[in-house]
Length: 116
Image (cartoon, rainbow, N blue to C red; front, side, top):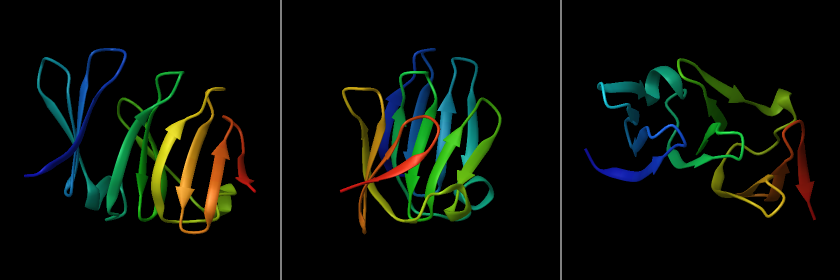
């Protein structure tokens, strides 16, 4: 299993991103989030923790948000218009900024906005 990325959240849990999904270590053991069950078999690209402590996952099939037990998928019907997210980061104002195949998008916590 090749680990693509490791992040530690503010609760001290480790998230390991692999081609097969995400594993979270919480000092008691691993919780696995397989790509085929939780991420619609997407290619997972990056992990990010925002200023509120939410874990975000960029993928070939859009954006995902993880809670302790669930994974939520943001789709085109959620105003997210580009499926493939190449990379993402937090800007100085705490917004999540995305680089997609069709340009840049920002999420301010409520809506996705195309950046021109």
